[in-house]
Image (cartoon, rainbow, N blue to C red):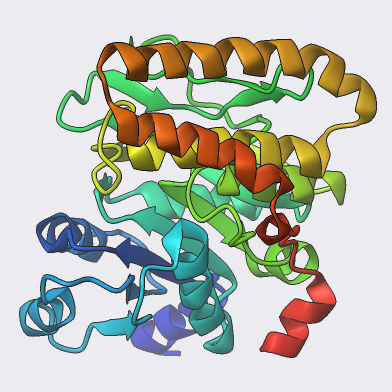
Length: 320
C-alpha cells in the first residue's frame, strides 16, 4: 500500500470539524481569526464564516481576501445564538462530527483543534470541550479556563485578568465553558438542540452547557488547548445599553429556565443588590439610556414577548 493511500485512509478516521466564525462589522478581526485557523495542524476541518447582517461590506471583503471561503449571510443581526445556529445547521448538513464555534476576535493556537478533538474522543459522554482562553494582547493573563456556576446565587466565577499560572494541563469537568471558543459534538447538538436564540447574547452558552449536563453530557475544559480572545469587541466594554439590557434580562431568564423554587430565595437578594448597583452607577453618570435598558430588561420578564425559546431535539430535526 502506498504511503499516500495510508494517509488518506488515516484521515478518514479523523473526526471532521467545521469551524464556525461569527462576524458582525468587525472584518479586520475576522481576517486575523481566519488566518490563524488556516494555520491549524489538523487534517480534517472546514471553515465557514457567518455574517450577521454586517453593514461594512464584510462579505465582499472576506470573499476577496479568502477565495473559496464559505460565507453565510443571515441578512440581519441574529445575535450570538441565532448567527451560530445558522452555521451549525450548515455544518451538520455537511457531515460534521464536531462543530468548533469561534468568536471572530479570537486567535487560535495551531494545535488547539487537535487537542480539543483528542479530549472529546476520550469519552462519548463528553459533549462540549473548551480551551484555556488567554487575553489578547495580554497573553499572560487568563480570560477563562472553564467556569463554575451555582444556581443558588447564579454567580459566574470567572478568572478573567489573573496571571496564567498553576492552571495545569489535564482536562477537567466544569459547569460551562465560555462561548468564544467551544467544541461541540454532533450527538450533543442532535440530542440537546441548538443554542436558545431568545438569549441573543450573554448566557446562551451557559444555558447550552446546563441543558447538556442535565441529559448526562460532560462539559470539559482542556487547558493544553489555547485560544486568545480580545473580548467584547462587538458589544463594547463596561456597562452600556446593550450589555446592561442583555446581562440583566438573561440573568433572570436563565434562572427561569433552570432554577427550582428554593434557588430563588437566595437569588432574589443577590439580583436586587446587583441591579441597584448598576442602576446607581448609571444614574451617577447620568446615562439615561442605560437606566432605560435596565428597566426594559425587567419589563421583558413579564411581557408577552418573554416566551421561552427552548428548541427541542424533535423541532431541531424537523428544521433540518
